[in-house]
Length: 214
Length: 218
Image 1 (tube, chains in turn purple, cyan):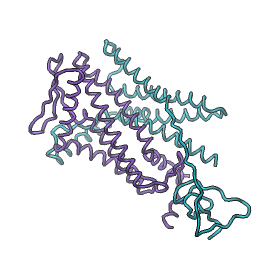
Image 2 (cartoon, chains in turn brown, green):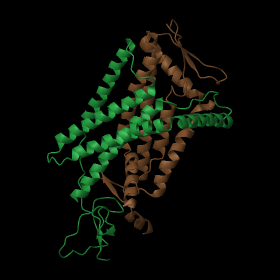
Image 3 (tube, chains in turn blue, green):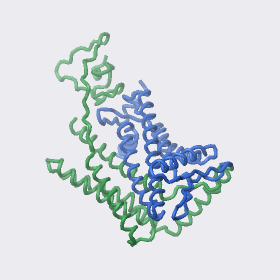
Image 4 (cartoon, chains in turn green, purple):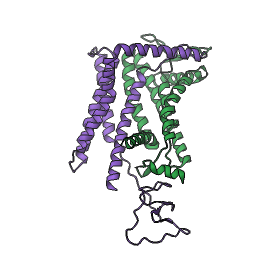
């Protein structure tokens, strides 16, 4: 009964017919380790062993560009894997070559999504571990694939509009604003629907601090 | 069994009488009858049948309309810029701040409108909520960076340069196999993260209102 006595001392939140209670260790793990994990994932994505991600994204973009707009684009892969792959569009009014870097494949966003979702704490009360892990996997799959597709279509329209004569800087920033808004909204909706523990844990920390201060 | 404990109607475990929720299964505990409590059979207890709670799916029309409006404004501004219109700003940092300013006040107005239509009592809670939201968003996303930037601009620049140089050196030292030009995330992820933080604040404020309502009704 020692553990239950500890739970009784802490606030229990009741939201949407569910109860939530987190331990100090869970909250500390989430708020301290998840930023570090995000940075480590970002570095991991930059490693040469992950060249296949850039390669796959470039080929996917090139395939869709040719399929949708018939631009005859080609992917340039460097055999030593020391330079980012490029997409080349012939008969281009400007340069026609685009390097697909880590920011182009939204590496920072993926790092953030994976790092945060992996360490979301589960409630100590009224939560089934198996069901919680399944929800985490579902959110990971949906959010990463959704953001990947959103980013791919952003690049496709960016290259197409640039090919049509719109300056790169203008169309890049404009499409970026639009896709960032859609992406953030999509991610928040997915999280709130399947993994509300993320927001609840932050709110729980606020309640905990508030109760301690009082 | 002591008198200060009651049995949970869902899982059947004994819990403290003054608790609101069961510490074993988390379900809402029903208050015990005041007069002549019935003896609880500890050996053959069967929990009463519970009816599943039907949750109604609420479509966030206001949020969808809001983001559609943001996208429309984005397209209109892009059209003007493409046709030669120059924005009266010099950097994208300023544009970012203006964007947040517009988003914050629009959200505040939406919140205010929603609170006025939904609250029939007219207690003024909507106005208060609007004030909190605008204050929090403006304070976090705009006020703090402006104050910091204006106060410590030269120091911040030198510190930022030193940090980025140190990170670059650390990366190049630690990972020799890595690409030569690893990009440090700059402006781009900030927009995504800023929007995410802003929406999270709204969701948490909604949780706050819900818990407040629950505690009042109990």
